[in-house]
Amino acid sequence: MSEPGDIALGCHGLSAGYGARTVLQRIDLAIPAGTWTAVIGPNGCGKSTLLRALAGLLPARAGEVRLLGRRLTDWPRRDRARRLSWLAQGAPATELTAGECVALGRFAHTGWLSSRAAADEAAVERAMRATGALDWANRRLSTLSGGERQRVHIARALAVEADVLLLDEPTAHLDPPHQEDVARLLRAQAREREVAVVSAIHDLSLALAADRVIVLGSEGVIGQGTVQDALAGDWLSRAFSTRVDIVSSDGVPLWRPRIG
Amino acid sequence: MKAPAQSAAARALPVAWVGGLLGLTVALALASLLVGSTDVPTSLRWLLSPDAQSDTVLWQIRLPRTLGAWCAGALLGLGGAIAQGLFRNPLAEPYLLGTASGAALGVTLCLLAADSSFMGIAFWGKLGLTSSAFVGACGAMALTLSLSRGVLQTANLLLAGVVVSFLLSAVTGLVLLSSPNAWRALQGFLLGTTGFLGWSSVLLLATALTACLIPAVLLSRGLDALTLGEDTAQSLGLSLPTLRIAMLGILSLATAAAVGQVGVVGFIGLIAPHLVRQALHVNHRRLLIAAPLVGGVLLQAADLVSRAVWRPIDLPVGSVTACLGGAYLVALLWRRARDV
Image (cartoon, rainbow over all chains, first blue to last red; front, side, top):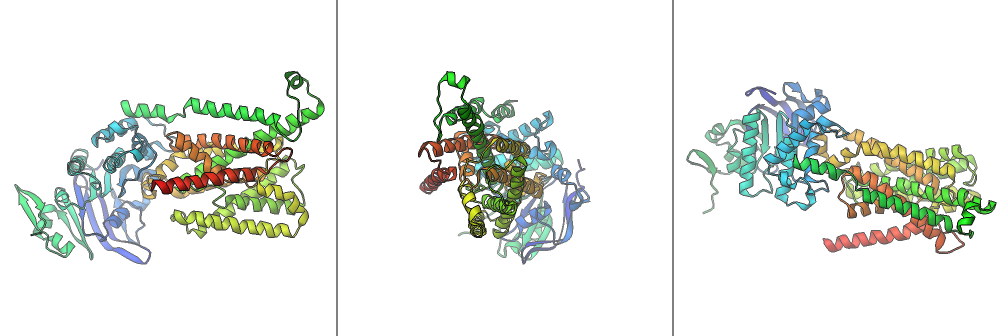
């Protein structure tokens, strides 16, 4: 497990894209262990592309990604999967039960034969308890609501017990109290388990509850740093190319929609 | 610990289901012994001391035929379950993907090259047929996948499969046109028939079934992971290319072994996994075990029907499964359209 403040995940000169389109160009990022980082930016600016490239799911066209100081491409597949966990956007409904789905999070530890040890069973239970999904362990994903499914998939990502947790829109499909739960959970993963948590989050108020932010605009990275840095530099207005009002309510930064 | 312990119990296939399916298999096998173009006496006394002709009919023709049909059906059921999981497409199966047509072309070319017909081929000859069917199945699979540009666009996959299927059937037809004798011999085969099954076929099919089933079940967690999406499966530490190549290899072998012995029999691979999913909650391990059991029973039953409806003529079993399977496919599509 890495020490707080160490760079758990970083990239240098990273370019990535699809087909003829280059979405990200020469990006440098450093994500410390023990912090929760929110990725903020307008639709189509490349948040998902960035997360996929950082997870090694989209090959870098140039530059490199480093996980715990080692080039991502140098990691053996299983070892890497134990240290870096990923949650895709959307929560697919399958015929698997919630318990079976979360147990797949231990694949890198158990391998093909799924001879699960007590440690694996414990990790699965911890993860399901943390997201409140334990009650549905024997229900099929296709019979759960969108929000319930999302919580099962988050538990699947947590069950890996990795050093780095990358989540693409983990709060989508959730009602506000459950969004709050997930945010609290991500913060706890960072504070208590020293995990480097990176999540793309649409809700600006929720994103500003993170420790650090990476703000993306259509021209690439506007800035990375603490939430205070982002507010002082008005990164959000630049990213969205329109004025974004952030107000302080008892020291908590909140987004105020400008409507009337 | 409450939840995972319960799911561990739920992971085993219900004994009642396995027992019921095996019981059905035995019942169908017994019925098959008694039905056919030749009447045999059915008394117990006769069973204990049969005359020579009936002895041949029962033990050298009908028993291997029904057992062979079961094995071939099981292979097709397994192939369908693998195809549906691998391509995440509920309509994928060896017949609709073109794999079966490729295997049939392989068999045809092999028989023409050897200047032989189906009757009286020994075990090694049948192994040769299966090998060339395997080459044909792999080729057809590669053709279908490259036509649909990889496995990403699952909507195009079946279209490509049907195109490849027509194309290869046309090639088979053209090849046969050049040699009318072979055409007559192979006509039954191309329609799908259980009539050529002997003990050597049973041995070959049973071996192929074992060789396909064991690795498929060992790799079944990979198909479970794929249901979560390709990105997620990859992030779990799974090698997608390895999984795909292994599963495509098993799929091609299962198809080739079945087609090499019973010809082109469609829809078993489509129906068997569907029936299992309708009856049970399934992860892929259970599906890959249950679908062969159901597929075996289906082809055994189709074989029985093909002999019983128009005695003393044996209908090609492929036309029976095509009728039943076509009706099932239409019902499936109709129900989906209604639900949407």
